[in-house]
Image (cartoon, rainbow, N blue to C red):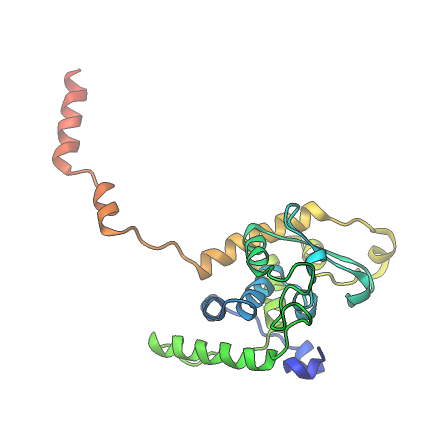
Length: 239
C-alpha cells in the first residue's frame, strides 16, 4: 500500500497532531461501528502504535495468540529488522476475532488472498461516523487527522500520561535506535514493552470504554438503608 493510498505524505510524517481524550473516544467508537476488518484494524492501531502496513498486512503465521505476540518479519519492516509487538488482552481479542482465513492475510476482503484495500474510503466512513456522533452530543467538528496520528498519540502519551521511559517508548513503536544505542543495545526489551503497552491499554480503555453506571436494581441492592445501619450500630453497642 503506497502512501498516497492512505492519504499520507512526507508532510504528514512531520505533523504534531496528538488526539485528545474525546477524540480517541470518537475514533474508537466509530471503528467499533465498522467491525471487521476495518474497525478491528483501527482499534489495533490505537492499542499497539504500529505502522499501518505492519498490522494491515499481517498474516496468521506472524501472530502467536498464546504468547500474545505479533512478529513483523524483517522483509516487510521499515528498518529491516524484525519487530516483536507484545499483544495486550484486548489486542489478542481483536486479532482472534479477525482470524477468519486460515494461514492467509488476517485483514482481508478477498477471503485472505490479499490484504485489505480501500483504506481511504474507510477513513471517510470513520470521519462521517465521528461527525454524526459529535453532532449528536453538540460537540464541534473534529479537527483533521490521519491514521498515522494514532501512532504519534500512543508514543506521546506513553511518556506524558503513564510515565513510560522514553527509550522503552521508542522500542514499543519500533524506531531504529540512535547512535551507540543502535550499536551496543541489542536487547529485545520484551517485558518492558509489554508492561508499557498493558499500561497504555488500561489508560486507553478507561477513556474509550468508561464503565457504565450500575443498573437501578443493582444500585438499590448496594444501598443500605439508614434505619438498618442504626439498628446494626445499636446491636454492636449492646453486645
